[in-house]
Image (cartoon, rainbow over all chains, first blue to last red; front, side, top):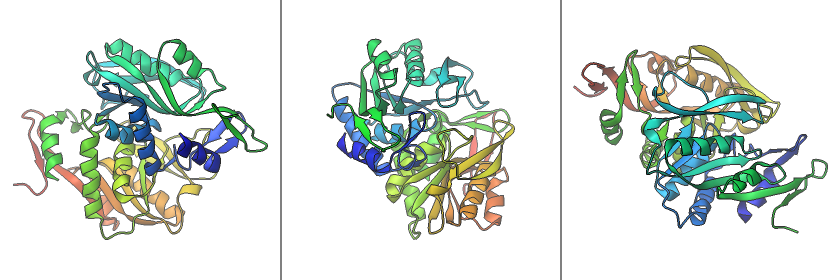
Length: 194
Length: 194
């Protein structure tokens, strides 16, 4: 998606440790006009599929998922990272290892909102090691729902998540796959470019 | 907002301890078509204001804020609840007491995304004790931005948050104000009704 790649080149900041900061438009400040274009692109890529629910994970996936859901005309469910007293007792749960925070946490989805007959599209802002997506896919499997695929805004192609998920047979559509980044020069190379 | 009140009556569940569960359409599973109607209603109510940024707090405010932001044609910034290594070093920060979780946490917003010249609308799903909203208002004040007001989906009128914020001179527009709920009968009375 050219519009997105241009935006990453213009406003993304490369930091030590292979960190790509896109918090001016994607995951702290959020450009909802860009999100609308992203949503339409996901809808095009999954046009042949009967998606009836979008599943994401708090927090930064929620905005993209909600705007994307408008293109699909379906509701969003977001997996929560800790159990609160507001959640229903009956949940699907699994553990996820966080690369960003260096810890393991539980994610949960109420059984009321995911189950047999659902055709689920996963949406998230980033795919790096793929642990969060893998956890969401497990919740979908546990629920008896069908996993249609995953729509990712930015995939770090030099980290193993994308390959790991595709090897499991999951259809992953990433709108921008970063092959390499150079902290010194600020250069970003995307998959499919020379 | 009649559509919202009808939905709360139909799908909301009253639980012990004055808990109103609306997680089938508002804050776990999210009905983005309802969110679009909510966003248009906020835009009407704040039609005379030059809002250029919407501020919310993770996680459940983000979806409503993003869809509302499409009606306003402005970006969203969401306050984060803990510091991650992906956040810029320079942040505005304050402490918030959580009613739901029974603890105190820090919220942060990067200084890059809030400051003098901004006209900020706060958006959140719930207003009960008002601690989160009060924290967001402090961040806006600390940043030198102007606070236009707060758009709330559901206010618990029998808890002190709404009165406390209005007494501070903050314009609070709540789309449904619950005056009382009866766990035994399932009855909900909204402000403005007999």
